[in-house]
Length: 581
View (cartoon, rainbow, N blue to C red):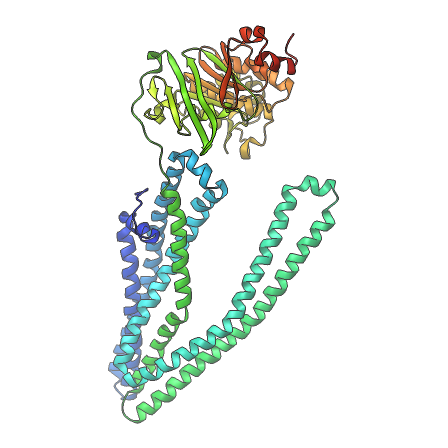
């Protein structure tokens, strides 16, 4: 599927133009809808002919016409079966490609663009629900609308050919019938919308009560929540009940209007028959064909609404598909061939224009060197990690990664040489094996076990009934904070990356858990270059070199021992954390 084509065509038109390989299936859908008009129209005219032959006493011709009518009805039934088979294959195949294109763009797009312009929930809605709704509209409504339109077009032509006089009477009567039906249906639509709103509000109360169940119980809000829920449910019930009553009345009105329309057509038709202007069979065929015309005109407003909805949904989808992709970059050199893995040279960066997070930053991480970065919250520590991962671009200065300019480096090649452990471990739905193996998909079960042992998690995993195949639950909910962190360390270990990035890797843990995990971190960092971003200074004591940041600039740098001895910023931080001993 073609993406990121920012043409001036409407998003809805682009949806079809970008999915040309599905055109044959879509063309067959249109053709089958057209055949519906042919088959139904011909079946109606054959019915009229059979009536005329029967009235005229020509039994053989009547039977032939009747058999012909049954054949066309059978053909229409076969067409319907083929139609639904083709719809499923054509539309589901097309929207599979759309979903894959959306997910592909999201995994390869510029991170800052997504963070600044979209919310994660809204993106998920576009990828899942919007595509599903658009698929339903095209597969269900559009194919149905095409059939009704073709039926109506063929029916109008044949009706005029059968009797232009009766056609004039019908087309004078049709607007009146539609106006009556529309006038009756408006209150029903309003009530149903209000009722759905009430149901939505009750769902909100339910979701709020479940997510805040601890607060509900502690503050004794059970009765209050029940009252609020009951108010919304009762209101919705009353509206639905009233809508049901109006719906029953509307069904009666529809029936009466339909009967009156048919009755008037029969009266006019009988007069025309008496005048010798039309046959009885032609009147019978005309009345049956008029139903197709009324049906199509009756849902014209719904057709327009669905087209507008499809255009709006397509626009939302293409807002994602048109997101800028990461620059692929040039092939990088082998990390072993360079001395400096990372070098910031007078680098500037701002999330919001004019509000620098980093200003003239100078920083170097050499091959095999473990560098710590410390400083208060908001000083730019985590931003440095994100820039090294090339999640963001930069505004000024120079960033060199493995001997290559950060703006030109091959992003995929760069990330193959990085391993990341963050403050909040990022775990995915699946098993322990799956989550560790995301570090290196080619890893064997034995490799995973070794990584878990090095991360000091195997003792726990080995006691589980399913071992490494144990499912973690949503976001690793079945593990403690320390266990989740060890699992993320195991994933970093198995990747065997040249440069390890630790972004506040122990700050979310208590002191005891931090001490227990330190050995796993030492195993991870052994023989590798590392950047250790930390607020707690206990995790940076073994660093080879240390940078102190404040307001996006380096205010102090050197070995931990030298900085401690100098009695400057780092010493004061140690003093505050009671590490001066």
